[in-house]
Image (cartoon, rainbow, N blue to C red; front, side, top):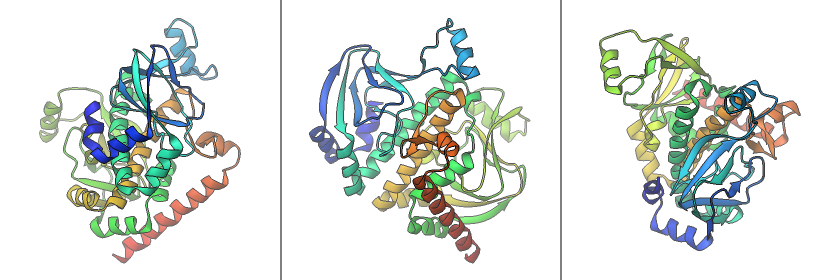
Length: 363
């Protein structure tokens, strides 16, 4: 993964990180990040290898099942490994981030550590640096998510209440001018129930935002050769599919090519008649290249969405928690009446989404 940071960051970005950070060597078995503990420092792994694990919950049946398979001990379960050049932690650039996993060294490792307060200040003041780091984070998170899914199995990818989380992230983070551009650059169209918006392993040509209706993500029971799958689809050979997630109003579909991740390995199908805003990938790519402010906000959204999907796996297994506001997880926030910050974000996201719908009707 070393080449990702070198590719995405500029020389100026790298110089700043080196000047702001401190390098240190860690022995094997050193805990770098402890699940549930605040993380005051942003880390980049320069050399070595780390393991990311989830602490088992004794209250969760899946946790007890994994423990039984692993010898009866309620110990951490490895879900991913981090190699040289990767950022440590899911979304360490968020002010209220609390790690939902434990990260420790597998081999003797060298890390670069930057105080999070300095990083947040830099991200706020330098849009170009922000765009580069958020994009690099999104690329690394996409790779890590694929690794987790491969290791734990696609059955774990169940996004509980995705329409609330995703719409909240997208429309609370983007500005009104960003949403106005998406409307102007895109096309609104109706899709009938059963329409496949994106076929697995096929090129994705547009970013879709679901304005109304419902979309299902399905995967084939057969994991065959991607090229064979594509030509099988062309010949109308039926596939046995299994639905593993469902999206709703406000969700974003087809962002994968923007971070050069692997081809989408699922089919995206309309469950019922739906209204979609589709922005051609070439237009969006040009906007991201020429508008640094928009790029910083958009790549931040993508990184947050990928981290949220990773947290959905964690929650599905009943392990750690990832906070988005005032040290409270989304689940505990619901239990204790929504925090003022979370309510404000919900209201802002809802208002912007409704504004988008009104602008769409005008167009």
